[in-house]
Image 1 (cartoon, rainbow over the protein chains, first blue to last red):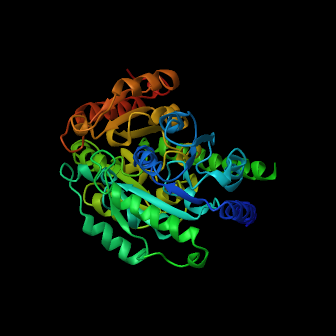
Image 2 (image 1 turned 90 degrees about the horizontal axis):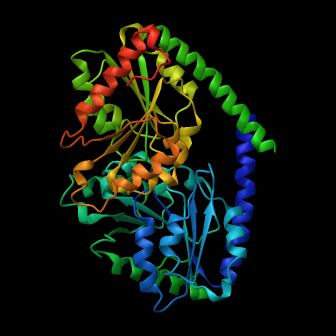
Length: 228
Length: 228
């Protein structure tokens, strides 16, 4: 019981900071997106494709969470206005305080998109609101077609779900119908976008979705409404 | 500070139960192996190959950890003497108390190998001793060659590291040298076994390693010595 109380108070403290983060970012009219997935689902590879394409029209910044190393930030540093690595040590997810610290190092008014690349983990990041506006969950083909049912919490809260590495569909046995079937039970509002950062398939659909979300946020009357 | 104290006391309570589990399993002369990896690295596929091969000589049981669903246990139930699913709900790892409960349902004296398939997660399972004798960490080729450095804690404690899905080496860009280089800094005692549950490559090397470990445990004088 004591353990549960402490966990709840940790979550409450996190959520309070997350609300401040969200207010700060909304005030600056930037759109923030929390990218979550298992390790190696292709979050960084997706950003390597996304950032140069968005740069034609938008200023982008990235906060990158990892236990150790600055490998992901190094891959991205030339591609965005600002890239900040947050090392969590043994921490299995980013929390709102870490994001708040990351935000303090950014000129928020100059940024249109902030991507927050969470620690590779399909469980813990789902419990921690960072103050992001949207949550995007990646699922890669080689992880198998059974993962939505096995990690439902993560997929339930997604605003978009990206099936990545679809260039491997020809090589691996994979039943997209099973993914859609699992999703039909837990999340019917998020689009499922099939893409490959290697072949480029689906990247335009992803960029279109991002643009729509940004326009919806930038138009005050549309805030809070679903953008179809 | 309060949070840290609570976490430490949770870990101490876990470790005490883990010691009991280990004593119980050692007393029954079974060898227990904690399989850990990211989601979709191929833990269940490996067991689908391993259990029928070991069945010629050994009695095997499996405890399978997952947040939800009994999908993995269903895949394995015909292949082992006993298969028990442990659903952790929102829990990101198995703990020693869950394993203790799983052990109570098994006739330990009749079992030679107990495989404990942990929740797919490269962070949290590393902190929780389950009472297992050996820890085996899987890393699949499609996850990328950068993961050992990014999740060092998990790889540090491994007694063997399995590079899985090596049948995809011809399809994906992958630098095994980078994996070996990272391992040379954090774990030089664990063998790195390259294998594919699809092609069968490396499976014999894995089975040989398992047999060696079982013989070393079964010979009291060899307990605690490295088995080359």
